[in-house]
Amino acid sequence: MNLTKKMIIAATSILLVLGSASGFATEVGAAPQKQSKTQATSNKSNLERQKKEAMDIFHPQDKKPGYLTVLYDGTDNSLSFSYLGITSSDYNEYTKMLSKYKAPELQQPGGIPEGYVFKSGEIVPPYPLFLTKAYESMLKELKAEANGKKYYAKKLKWNEAGGAAVIFSKDSDVIRISSQKVQPLITEVTRVPSKAEKFENLSINGTDAIYSTNSNDLYSTKLRWEDAEKQFQYEISIYKKSPLIKEDLVAIAESMIQE
Image 1 (cartoon, rainbow, N blue to C red):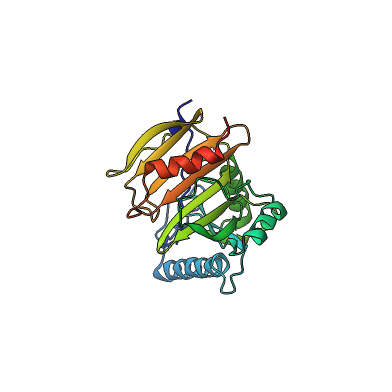
Image 2 (cartoon, rainbow, N blue to C red):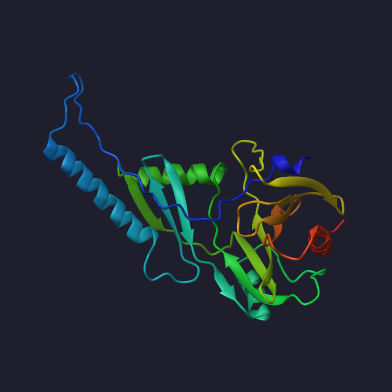
């Protein structure tokens, strides 16, 4: 199966809603009437208040590890998520967190290049990705809870992780290895490379993988694959200027993929 048609990249950045909107009052059976200046000002003020209240919840001042919030934007009928992962610089503590939060298994693999050592591990809260069934379900739920509001946010509770990540470093260079649970899509998605980005299809121990380079992401070089049996997605990523090459990433993946 062509892995390109199965991969969906989660957007790693949080969207800040900047738009504003205003409405026009109408009566059933009557011709639309132009709003007065006072009405327009009142509507704008109400919308700004809704937005501020929602953003205060979406980006709380007292952020604690593990917090997860969702923002419903009625101006474009979308959801955004904000979270703070639970991290540890102690490997033994990190492995305990994997078990506690039932995260996708991601322990120290073999094949790590010489000189790179464990720096930190992270447990990532669960949130639905765009174009997944879970996203559409939550979108309907939040729209109903918003009850006509254009902006609505709330804190989400969770006890089972959506993913995990480990970082290995050598001086200023970093290797990031992550895993996440596969989320069923509502439609088939084809990942298209950006203008400068390049894709290469690989087979590693009989598993289809995609090696990508030159993206605009912080980690611009990536190796991705999916474990169809466990329903996990994995990614090994490095900086654009990393001295590591494709064969280094493949060696790590080979230690993680069982034939």
